[in-house]
Length: 358
Ligand code: SF4
Ligand code: SF4
Image (cartoon, rainbow, N blue to C red; front, side, top):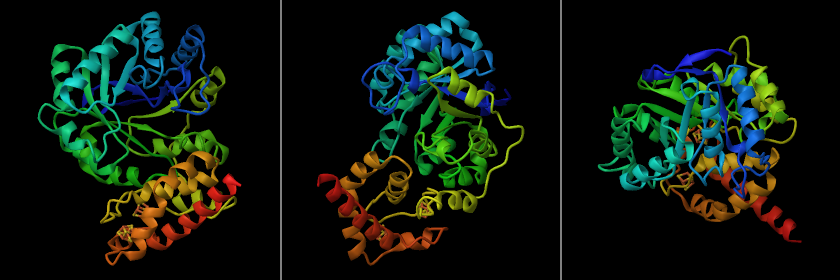
């Protein structure tokens, strides 16, 4: 296992981090195929990863990730708290709620947290999070109290990551990306502000989809070629530990975006959207999320993707039909005809929803 420095924190983290969603128990629909191991099994799996050099363990507050936080706390006590780095998170955006959540997390873990993230910050809650007495202020207070060592912001949005990168109160960022959805990683690599922050990457397998199309080594090598500190992989069995920890790439190479698309083209015609998030819809349509759901529909997440698309595609496609602005097209480096693609997705959803009802 190789290690990288987590930005200005000085922490040395393993290039591959352990994502604890698959070791949770309970009825938590975070992952449709979680393994639900009992406490002893979960601790053994984490310990096995630790023996192979993994020192970064990422979790979330109970019950967001079921009981994973409690299991991780017990593992930390067993292995020696100082030997591992715990990153934890919760979806509370105002200061009071975040303050209480961190106390709750520490109680669940039975110890302090190395990095605590405000989780899933998006456009609706970012001003509360970054504002006075928001979650970031609370995390800084908790840092001075010794409950946490470093503060973090976790989000799927580039603009919010950039806001975090500019904010002195934020130590570490957590975002998503993989060899297909790499547009954000490309932008991060070009923006010097990110170099001061530690960066932890999630969704390396794209919700478990990509290993069916690419070797694990290619997926890891691809993301580790970017200036990130650690790539988190959800792990729920010893076999999965082997598949990831024993496949650490010797060097870092990322297949080109066209190479990735051409592999996927063997199955369907993907929308060549790398989720760079440069396009902006004047009505607030989240173009990159709709395009992701379309691609995921053909990549094995059909039920989930269709249901999500059904929630908003009709309205988004209608707005595109009437739109006279269309500035989104000019912003797209992949020159995707966004409004036309929206109509195509609307038709697909109409057809498949109808078929699934019949
Ligand atoms: S064309 Fe569609 S996605 Fe683009 S700005 Fe107009 S409504 Fe938004
Ligand atoms: S549609 Fe184009 S601009 Fe928008 S996220 Fe995808 S690749 Fe980027």
